[in-house]
Image (cartoon, rainbow over all chains, first blue to last red; front, side, top):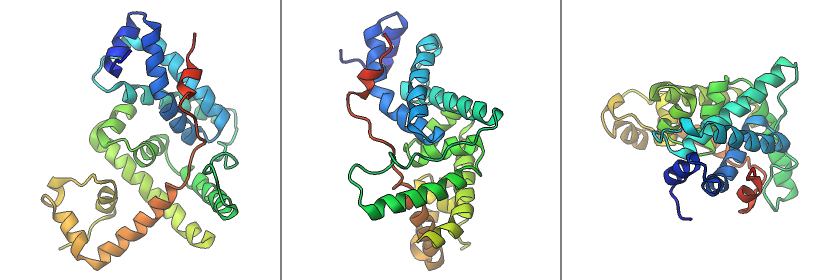
Length: 185
Length: 70
């Protein structure tokens, strides 16, 4: 079926499972990417993909089409990931760093693997300095290419607050990364 | 003209320049003309570009189909 996201969401709301499947197939990879960057490891990201679409299915009646389906599902994915991070924190567990054994390019050189691990370690520490909102805003802007309006919708804030969150995140990262960066190079 | 603030440099990097902040196109014109701002922008760009080399595990085209909850 050649549905738009909007059309598929409307069909899915009426109980059409094939339409929901279309949405899952279209958006799973981007949800995985966001969840991986937020949670820091592959297994958690996989769990977040499942949880995100389970929540999306249950909440389909709330999708009103004002934002795109992709933005709406990003919001759910971000919230699922934040719930996991908060639960971890409440249990006194540390947020794991990016799983650098898997987070490298498909055919990495030894130098690239080393550099990637160095970068990941520095970046993990820097990301810990950000608030949840700043971290989410930054990941969406920097890695997912979301515009300010989309980020605002995901975060449930105004455009100006979303823009400020991206700026604060970059400012904190720069402050944290620049000294360590020079040492790693 | 005043140098670009950190916020304006960040906006320039992401292409989120606010026309009302200095007058339309004024920030990019200043960035084009000012060596000091260009250097600051390059430092920021270099850091942010390097972060883009952080990749995530690949998921194939069939990944979405594998997720569907029956």
